[in-house]
Amino acid sequence: MFSKNKNKGHLDQEQHELLETAQHRIKQKKRLYAHFVVFLIGSVFLILINKILKYWEEYDWFLWGITFWAFLFALHAFNVLVTQKFMGRDWERKQREKLVAKQKERIAELQKEIETDFPLSKINKKKEL
Image 1 (cartoon, one colour):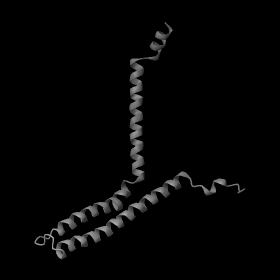
Image 2 (cartoon, one colour; image 1 turned 90 degrees about the horizontal axis):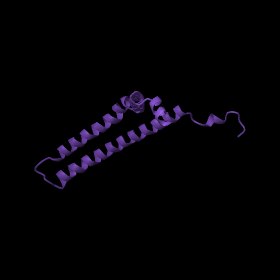
Image 3 (cartoon, one colour; image 1 turned 180 degrees about the vertical axis):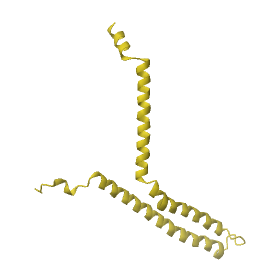
Image 4 (cartoon, one colour; image 1 turned 30 degrees about the vertical axis):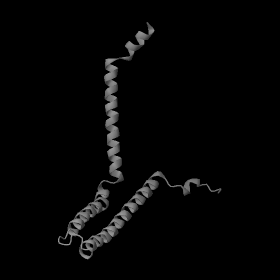
């Protein structure tokens, strides 16, 4: 209460960003694991519909469904486990900074064009007359 280090309990900006990134990654991995469980249960369900309930029994259509779902799961896993390492928050921040820098350059160019086409000295002279 009367300590000299009052900011000791507060997280600085970097620690806060690291914590947010960690929480985001945890949610991504949790969704991936949930997707895997749903994939397994859904695959068994598709097999049961085809083989036990004998829905369109003459053709093993469940293989196509499971294959397509496995492809979607592989994309999800690739996105969570591989892509996020290379295109994570740091990559997004760098891309945002590049775009902001380009916009600032373009604004500066437009301001130069306006100043050359319509100098302030001419505008001030017209106001004085």
